[in-house]
Image 1 (cartoon, rainbow, N blue to C red):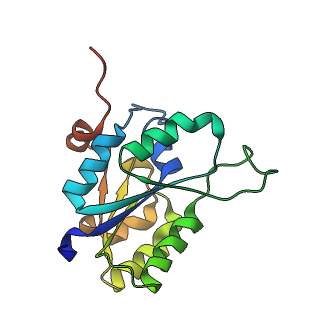
Image 2: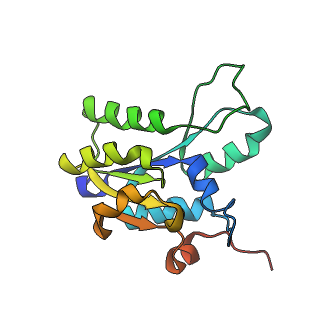
Length: 174
């Protein structure tokens, strides 16, 4: 496999959901299958890891949609006392997952991160220095952390620009 075409995507599922479907102004829904194809074609993503807060059996159809669209679904571990009481908070899980893949020298080229959360800034800086960073993709460009503005346009993109939305949004039924 051509190494340039072997990037890994790490998606903060809660951030993606809140930055699209749950936006206060102009909410929209992502077609997960089209989004997975977009990541492959635009960023050469061969594996896409989709992180969610916790396993909730009532959401089984959502989990099946995510997996059938081609994402590898990963859940944050919570104690039974915490289930349903807090947001996903998968930041540390994503950071550790990326670092483990680097430490164990997993064969991939670069990281594409889908989130607007500033908690990933140190990871992004590290990946840039190590030449292992492709792009941070903000679900909602207006709500992305200002920490990333210093990176410059080559390092970030938004899903909520009109061209990208046309490619990945859920088409309305006729």
